[in-house]
Image (cartoon, rainbow, N blue to C red; front, side):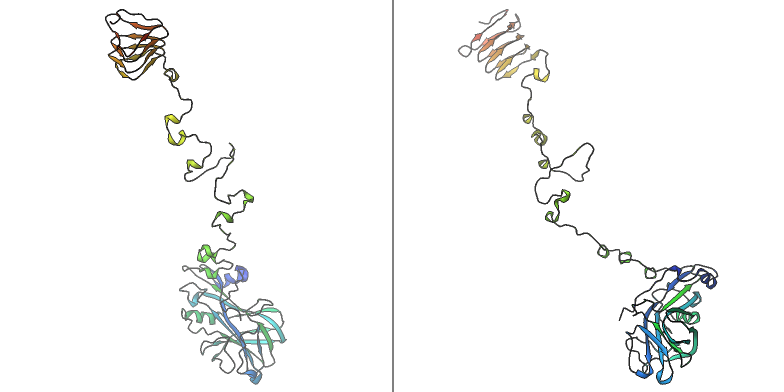
Length: 390
């Protein structure tokens, strides 16, 4: 047996526009379909037999041959909260006549005794029914739809909501013993034309339309959950699950990228310098000594002006251009001149002093060159002096 909560929503065009306008004079109009939660038939000839799995409801005979059709609809799940009976502008029962062995009139009554289930209802345990005919319709042709207006009955049911008071469903009986017809149940898979109860609601100035009233929604429309999505791709949890057809990295290691000016990439986060190929050492350590081709002379730095020393102490001193040495200067090592050195004060050299170009110019009365005896020699290419120290 199929689920009793199956909803067969046929869409907004189920009800003709003129019928809606005729049923509702003003206010918002809403067309919904009640949910068929049970349909079956009972037979006096098999008084204790339940026929909940039957694909048709037989309505025929009388007395010991009587067969009656039973239908029950749920209204709570499709009507906005607070709906009143007066807002039911029209309620139409629609059935598919599967067979019409002997056509005729079928009467509809309200079930008043107690709730029932299509799995267990039989002729002997069937609940009481009203003696008032709620509606009648004629069946003359098989394989066609028949309808009957049940607006007053449904209005009464709605006034008994939300607990479903009075809504115990309806029963169909033949108006004459000669009638022998059958209608599809919701278990029918041949046509899927189970019983329908179409409702037109009028004057809805407030209230909420529920997702259960909308046809064709997928599960994610109401759950909002990722797990409700269909066709979700499998997300790899490690690189071994990636195929290399699209150039993915399939193992740990270094990835090589070929970039052109027309194929810029945008990266988020930081790339470790250790993963960038071709960087010089200075790019990460920032050290002067990591520079290749660094200058080793002042001229290499673009300094061409004469060098002026204003005193102090140096371990070794080599002059390759013009230099003026002022202040008391001590050279604790070799003093080599390949250019011109001008002394404006005393200089003490503890190593050898060598000139290979213009030599050392000694300014009289201003400076003196002192070579510590036993420690250094003076070898001159050209040496001009005012006073040579003794």
